[in-house]
Length: 396
Image 1 (cartoon, rainbow, N blue to C red):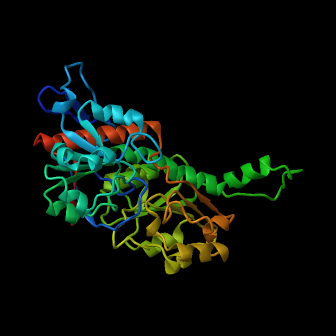
Image 2: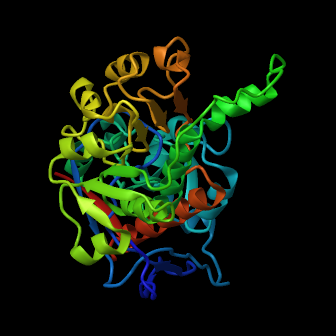
Image 3: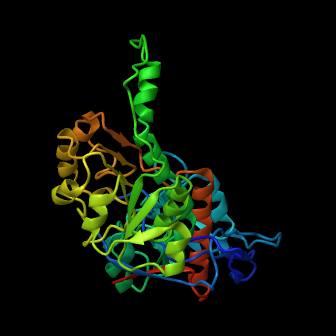
């Protein structure tokens, strides 16, 4: 959503007795997609946010200098590990320790009988630990699963709900960095930056060809599929390039929101595909959006068009995309997400020179990772204290 002059009201979430207060400032709830780096299960979900009118962006956590409870008195939170290849980053673990007793999966498995009683929450970072029925059955006191990131297609929401466990995510932290990476991919593809860098550093380069050309973003037409918070922030950035902005969404934006970014609504996605020079995908992965873009849709796009995906890899039929790029059905593609991640090293997409693929880095910034952890902590503490939950996710 666009930023208003005033941010949302600062809402304090009371914590467990003796813990430092966690201050939370909310932003607008209209988030469309892009959680964090995983592809397991397509889940259709609805989301409820506790917000106030006029809230627009940014939120902070503060921890006043009050006496922190002894570690044994803190509620237990299960994490995969600290550090290493897949563990929670050490800085984030330090944040969690202020409010929880950290229990790693190794510690839990080594002493299930004792640890299972202590664990009241699970912090899911980079889609880990895996939440399955066996784990849920072994945690009788589990109340909440706090997902770091907005996407929850790796969680079986219905199964989790059947155990009486709540699920939360972190939509507010992801919108700006994900919109940034979408625009970065658009620019990099348009001006062939990756190819240009390779030519420049190659030992075989003896001169720069005068006919090596890209295309301009300025005054081009951008089609955004999925106009939630991330999609809207993409539109805000695109206005700086005087782009003509089209969008397709389940629900049309308010007139004043459209006018603020000069966006035009396309009721039919086909109309957007036929007119756009750049098509950007910013949708949740659900059964309805799986392979949303296939051979038919690629065929509707201009031969000079570029497809950009910052949502989920499975939103595109990758076999159809390979064929379209090989046969010049479209000019290029730029993907921050694939299915699976990473792609097998012999995947045909990796052999093409008219594609850019980045390793799902939409929210991979120092600021965003910390903000997501702070948001997840606030969500989990709200559940444990019976307070309104800022970002709860529900099965449909």
